[in-house]
Length: 71
Image 1 (cartoon, rainbow, N blue to C red):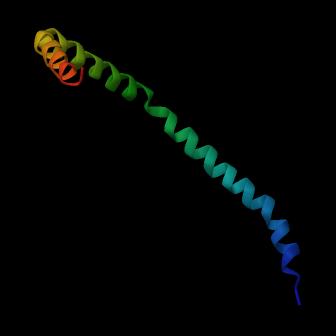
Image 2: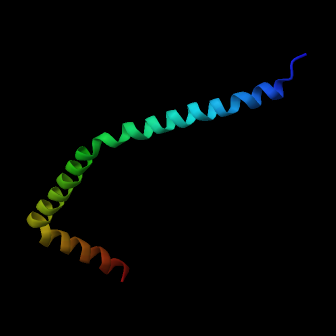
Image 3: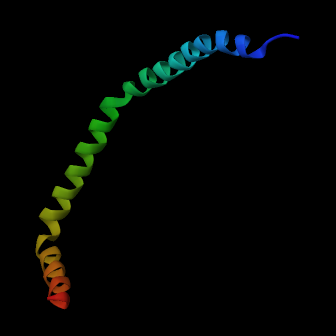
């Protein structure tokens, strides 16, 4: 009868190496879209600035009205 504990223990380092390789590959593949995230962030900031420029008085009035209900 074969001792399965010895076989499992000898395969463990190989499994860990394969797992580490898969994790490293996944981390490397996620790093390529930085310009996309920068563009999304800048576009969102631009939309907020544009809305604030157009509707600042209405937004301030809406905020003050909401705060007055609780204060």
